[in-house]
Image 1 (cartoon, rainbow, N blue to C red):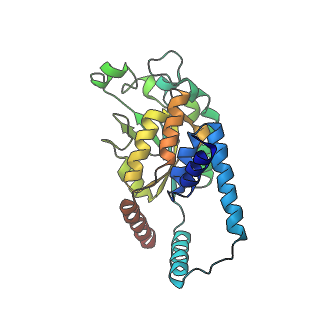
Image 2 (tube, rainbow, N blue to C red):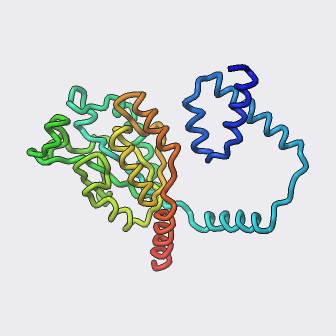
Image 3 (cartoon, rainbow, N blue to C red):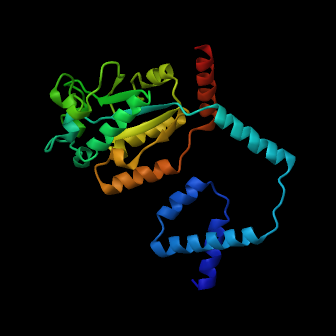
Length: 262
């Protein structure tokens, strides 16, 4: 491919009009020289745009922008902090489903829990839990069995009285659990995801949440996967997704009604 063709491809990529989140996800997967090329083309377009005569937006466009901005400002974000599967069986060295890096994020998770409580943000604990005869244990090894020490929260992150605790039987925290009910009662629209494992429990919970109209936030310093590759894959997937719009509208309208009724 000639330099001219390569430049044309970069220009077509930058001008494709795709959502920014998809552009960022794609750029993150490019080799360094291609990322640099996208940056150079974007900067060149910005310089040209800055030199052009400004165009007044139409009244219709202006009204749409102002309406959207006002709607967002009128609905402040209502968050809940989810602490997912930070269990003794996941953080103890040598256990079948140990997530070694999960021990490294304990201080950051503890700090975020303290900050959430100080700010009045609810902290919800999600616990994987299995009966001794659960067929799941044949596939994944014995872990998080009801009544055992391994199914408990890692002691430095232990829940406090009043913190909601939700148990689940599989990957997603929403499957066959009361998480949806808890979040509805708390009237939250955004979930701050922390815990392990990023490419399993966190990813499946986050994608389920998006389809239910929740927005997701996953701070990089409070998530731990089984591998660096798994973490990057999961974070890349979530960076490209937004809440399902119809479900998001229903959730926000419901929360607004709940708040107005209190």
